[in-house]
View (cartoon, rainbow, N blue to C red):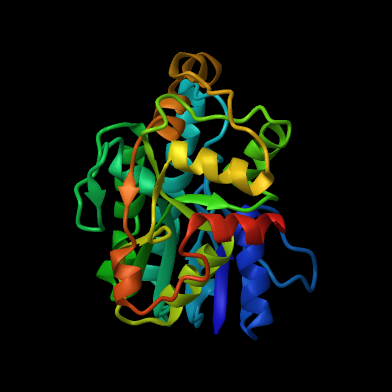
Length: 298
């Protein structure tokens, strides 16, 4: 396939591009600088609304991953960048694709399980309603921004991605040092559900969405077995052979991280990948402990 990818240099994007190229696909990144002579890349400026339509003609698929990182304290300006980078970038890509003469067959956009908000023990599937916090409202707008492409007959898939596990990026990378030092512990009550997924399965979900015609609309990209934060903590400690006796109280998390603590660390989302499973996707790592042992070489 001939595939265009935004966010190709990011944590997920770099691994996905490598996998696609290893599979024999031609991948052209969208980049925010003017490509050098001979460089196989396309320029875009999502903030300025610039994207060369001609470079997108006659492509088989587009994967959209780009967006402001959500880590760090959320000032009003940071929240605006998180929202605008996702909504405006998606709208620019979708509206540009909709006007092409030779349109791609599929647009696969990253989204997040933040769509569901803080839902306690409720089991959440793709048809579940959205939550009401900042991340949930951002995800609603983010997904809606791709509507021009869907209206133009392009198959659009929104992968609602959970906590991505890999030692070189994301939450696991941040957790490894304190846990290896024996300073790990649950966050808050530990009862909140964390819907996780190994990076290999994120890549697998994107590749499955590219080729499986039955997938369209929201698709939960999480492992089949969500765990509570306490279960995650105990499992990571067991894999690392370290105690987990130092909990992070909710007030301390809020003091350190502000609103981000409530929406990322203390929020509960028990998400199931119903549509991925129905579409025949076979998870490489459906259970947490084998996933962590593989990722950490344990």
